Image (cartoon, rainbow, N blue to C red; front, top):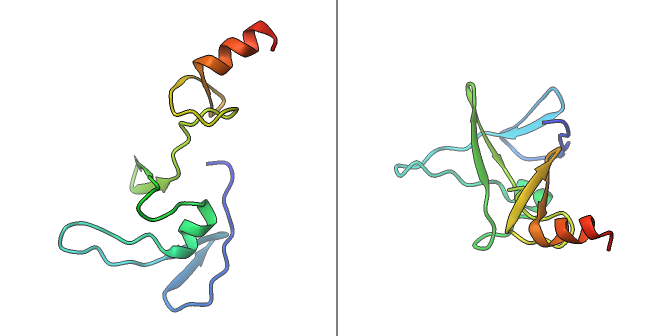
Length: 99
């Protein structure tokens, strides 16, 4: 995780630590949490139409916007990945041809 966003809030329950912003949320009886609207807006995630990637790393759970879209055309049919960038087969073929 090389880049982090600094987000400023003036709400109760906001915790700032080492430049990262966190909000404490309760987990309901079905194991669900609500991602705060400020975070969704900052990442461009829309309710009902967006998705999140869930990663477990040591003692933490990371929620992030999926990065599986082609960086050129936005296709989700990604075949290649290089340096955390995804490229679909069609765009890769166009690059190979020099188009």
